[in-house]
Every structure is written in C-alpha cells, then in structure tokens.
Amino acid sequence: MFGKISALFAGLKMTIVSGVFLAASLTLLLMGIKLPVDPAWLTVILSGYPLLYIALTRLVYDKWISSALLISMAMLASLAIGELFAAGEVAFIMAIGAILEDMTVARAQRGLSKLIALTPVQGRRLVRRNGSLIEEMIPAEQIKKGDLLRVLPGEAVPVDGQITSGNTSVDQSIMTGESLPVDKGLSDEVFCGTINCFGSIDIEATAVGEDSSLQKLIRMVREAEDKKAPMQRIADKWAVWLVPIALGIAIGALVLTWAMGLGIMEALNRAVTVLVVFCPCALALATPTSIMAAIGQATKHGVIIKSGEALELMGHVDTIAFDKTGTLTEGNLAVVDIYPFVDGVERTDLLRLAASAEAHSEHPLARAILSCAKELRVEIEPAGDFQMISGKGITAVVGRHTLLCGTLSFFKERCIYIEDSLAVTLDNFRSQGKAVILVARDNVLTGAITLSDTLRDTAPQMVSELRDMDTNVVLLTGDHSQTAGYFAKKAGIESVKAELLPGDKVGSIVELEEQGRKVCMIGDGVNDAPALKTADVGVAMGSMGSDIAIEAADIALIGDDISKIPYLKRLSRSTVRTIKGNIIASMCINAVAITLSVLGVLNPVTGALVHNAGSCLVVLNAVLLYDRKFDRMK
Image (cartoon, rainbow, N blue to C red):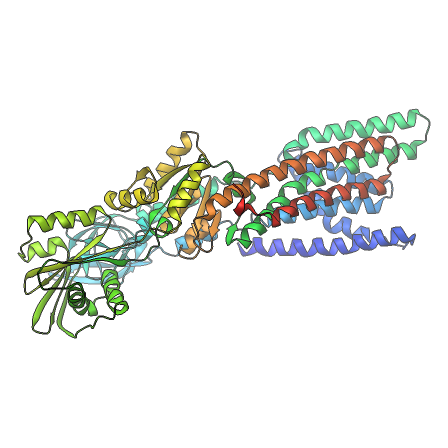
C-alpha cells in the first residue's frame, strides 16, 4: 500500500520536473534561441519513456492496442523529424492525465488490513488434568472444533461457539452493527471477534479458522474488493480504432502531399502533425479532470469521494439501501419514557431509584439512565450490596430498600408479579423499538424506564427527496424486526429486512443487483463493510463510522449528514454530462485540427499548441464543476 502511494508521489514529482523543462523549451522556441541540448529532451525522457513502456507492454504481452500506443507513435514521429517540443508536449499532457486518474484510485486494500487486525490472536482453552479443568492460553489458529474455551469480561471471543456455562452481554457490533450489547445465556451462539462485556462464559468451539464468522467477513470484503476494477480510460476503449484511423489519415496526408509535388519533408511534416493533433490527450483528460473537480466540489460539502467510478455510478443508482443504527439513527441511546406503575411514585422518584441502583454498572443502558438523571439534576443516592447478573439485571440496596433493575425474564425469575395490563404496556414499548428496564423496590414492580436510539431529523425529508428522484429506498439492519419496522415507518421507508448478519446484507444487495438495479449501500459499522464493497456504490458515515467501513466504502459523509445523498446524485449526473460534453468538444477540436494539418496550415509545433489549447479548454470546462450549486438544484 505504502509502495503505491510512494510511486504516485514519485510520478507526480517527475511530471512537475518534465513540465518545467517543457516550459523552458517553449520559451526558447518563441525567443528563437537554440541550445546544444533542447530542454524538451528531459521531458521526453521523464514523461515519454513510461508512456512508451506501457504501450509496448500492453501491445506485446496483453495484445492490447491502447491510447498510449498512438501517443508514443506521435512522440517518436516528432522526434524523427526533429520536433522535440511537439514530442515532449504530447508526452507531458498524457503524464498529467495519468497522474490525475491515479489520484482517484490509490486507496485499495487499506480497510481490509484494519479488518484483519480485529482477528483474535489467542484463546483461553480449558483442558482436564488430574480431574480438574485448567486454563491455557494458545494461539487462535490452534483452536479446534469442539474445544472448550473460557472468555473473561473484556476479552474478544476467539472463535464461533456455543455457550456451555455462564451468562453475559456481548457487544456484537462488529457483526450486526447494533449499539446495544446482546444478552447471552446457556446454548446461545457467540461469534468470533465479538466482545464479552460482563460475565465469564465457557463456550464450545463450533466454527474455527477460515470457517469463523469474522474470517468469512474478511473473505467477503476481499472478494467484493476484487470485483472492483479501476476505471478504464475512455481513450483506451477507443484506441483500437483510433490508431488505424490516425495512421490511415497520416499516411493519406503523406501520399497526397508528396503526390502534389511539395517534397518529402513537407509531406512528413503534415503526416507527423496529423499524429500529434490526433493524440487523444484532451479525450484522456476529459474524465479525470471532471472527476477531480467534482471530488473537490463534494469535499467542500463534507463528502469524500474516493473514485471516479463511484461518482459516475452514483448518478445511475436507482436503489439505496440504508443500515439503521448510526446511519438513519443517531446511534446514541437516550431515555425516552419514565413510566411509574405505583401510585405516589413520581417520574423523578423512579429515575432517582434506577440511577442510584445503576450507578456502579458499566452497561450502556445504565450509563444512559445516569446521563439522563444528571441532565435533569436528579439526586443520586449511595448504593450498597451491588450485584450484577450478567445479561439479566442488577440488584442494589439504596437507603433501606432493595432495588432490582433488569429485564422481564429477570423479574419473572425473581417471582415478581406483573399484571396483564402492564405486560401489554411493555409489549407496546418494545413494538416501538425501545429497550425496557424494569424497576422493582422491595420485590414490588415500581415502574419502567425505556431507552431508544433516535431517528435523524433529516431522514424523512431525505427519503422523500429520493423518492421524488425515482429512487427506491430499502432498510437493511441486524436489529429486531419490531425495532426496524418502527424506525422504517418513521423515516417513510416501506421495504425492510431485519435481523441480518453481514452475509445476509450482502445477499440482499446481490439479490437487488440481479433484478437489474443499481444499488448504493449506506452504513457505518464493520459489519457493513462487505455490503459496502458488494454494492455498486458504498457510502460510509465518516464521523461515527468505523475506519473499516470508511475504507470499504467509495464515498464517506464526514458530517454524517445523510441529506447529502440527493446532492451526490445531482453532482454525479452533472459530472457525467460534463465528461460527455468534454469528449464531444475534444473530438470536434481534433477534427478541425486534423483538417488544417492535412491542408498544411498547421505544422508539428503549431499543431502541438492547438492540441494543448484543446486540452486546456477541456480542463477549464471541468473546473466549472467545482463552483456549481448542486445543493440548490432539483
């Protein structure tokens, strides 16, 4: 990776140096000064040699007639008749085009290396010796299917497995992207790379090595990345017929001029001029310059576009798939309802009891409750005899009362009575995508506190705007179906797929693509990386998103502003139109220049200058993209 970046900077320095010497050659030419060695020779060597090497390599080894071959022919023909400036000019223009394009595709493989770094390197295996279980740390690659492993709080699960002992809460965000830890107990599955948050658990290994969930995730990212080929230059696509046409016109000009009796040198000059003006430099610059200008435009709006291909494809996208947590939602838990069940207990009383009991807990739900209490300036009382039952709840003594905070199943285990009417209320809370923490005082159900993520304010308007642009919107999430349905309804999304693992998201993307749709995936977590790579365009949330998701994506929203998605579509459409306009303009300029070359109006030097002027016009038109107001366009 670092070698590619170093090569890019080295190529840029060489191109700048060759440009300086070409400018010096032009200055001397216009002043009529001749030196023993023309400075354009250095331009030919620095910019022309790589071009010639590429042309010959593609021709000999790949059997590919590229635009580099046509330009090399023009360069060599110019050298043959002593027109050094013309030879250096075409080589320099193509070197600029290559640098601009390389700058848009120099980011491959960085995200994959970070994903691989998440792979656990060791595990705690349990072996029976002298009738007792003994722990031993071994490399993760030595773990075999069926091995018994122990995972302590804070440790990563080394392989996929099934819990044989213990209860805990597991941070599965690497796999599902969801912010809430998932409670796990006997016989539940845990996945490689996920984090054991609280209780110690013993697991039996069920999938190890390349079969583990994390390795499958890595493999999916690698395979999807391999499907992404660098954008081929438009000039190269047309070079198969550009080369013979250019040669045919040049030879025709040579024969016609010689037949008219104007002399062999004049005939050669006209033929070489045809090759010089026929070089597709403006054509080669049409795409990378427009893309670089559009990328600069997007950067001003807090959007990082990594490839020209993604920018172009975004304009053709007709389906956008969103992750939920951290994408459509803010990704931060907050207290929504404080619901007392007992007469005489006020909302602040219930919050004080829960916050006091949860003060020693490190669970994300507990932290959200404490944050709410501090915000509302509710006094938190000291608690004693604090105990946490991993994956279920906590107990504590506050004042002279024993408090319990936890799940419905935890309360049922403690034989705390819950009326049917209250059970209906709790079901309603869950149907709204809320996490419910029950609070009991002295074994009497006192109330419930609900917590939820919050939908981004811009989400409904963004979805509506995309619909007006004839774009289908889909929600793909690892969250529960009730929660997913609730948030989808609030955002105005009709198509929802919930409880998806990374492979399921990829499958959903592939299914849409097989239906002939152009799909954009928008996500923020490690678990979204394969889907981001598989989709035609991947967009990551830059501020909250993981580094891996950002590297896997083609586009990153630095400010996490999803309202920029319609802007991106408008920008990409205009960029495509500009590229097409530049191509048409360059072809028209070439046609006029070729005619003037055949008639003898242009010579190799003036032809090179006209050719250079055409390239400049293309660049200037592309630069206009930078200042357009795409956020105001409909």
